[in-house]
View 1: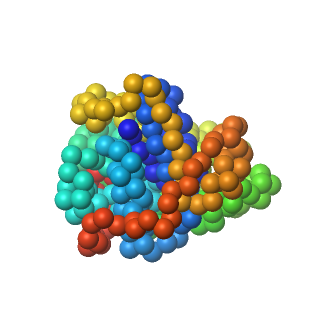
View 2: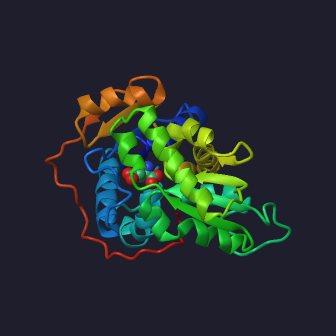
Length: 302
Ligand code: DGL
């Protein structure tokens, strides 16, 4: 079983791409709707709730969990891999979604964390729309510039967007907000245009058409779900051990920490079909391992 986790609905954009690419595998999706949005939370809180949710997926026999959330990948993943995973769940693994995105944005494999020339996007400007916490982490500019020093990375935080998407806000409200964020980015750039854009929050592909509408036509939108699916398929070829005990008939399970009836009803608005969410036991203790010390690191298995 493969676990896919996000603060709420956003991770479904990654989950859908994985289902299309790897239809024979079984997946359990967990949305932490009770705690969404994560993007403006304190890093210590993000670390704790992320660990609790990954723990839940491991308890449900997931051998591998994908954090389908940029915020949690940027803030918590390195810490959990370094200080929690090996003791709490030996033999299991956690992957993030920022590594494949950086690889796609730079066309440089993650392991090469220094500039290699010639560079495909040498003089490009890459714009990143993301949550406040992802922007504050500096992960995208640091990692892109480590590989491509002359690429300019401009970030635009969209503090209200994921929360409004979660709440099922309508297109008029979302369109207005997205236009404001795009205008703010273009103002920072003094009239220049980015060559490409990373929607660095998994909620944003749910409103990709509104971003496309607001952005100048020349701008290339990088597809994070596609990049993650490519990378994950290759990862599984190198690590077939995580496919052990995979059910013969592919299972699809959708879990939420929120109210399953409400979450199921809202889900129909996102993917064009209703998804039946089950509740996880809210009263069950969340933590099985001692609290890990918080250390925010920009590198290492994002
Ligand atoms: N979808 C998540 C991300 O990719 C989190 C958004 C939020 O909960 O604020 O950052």
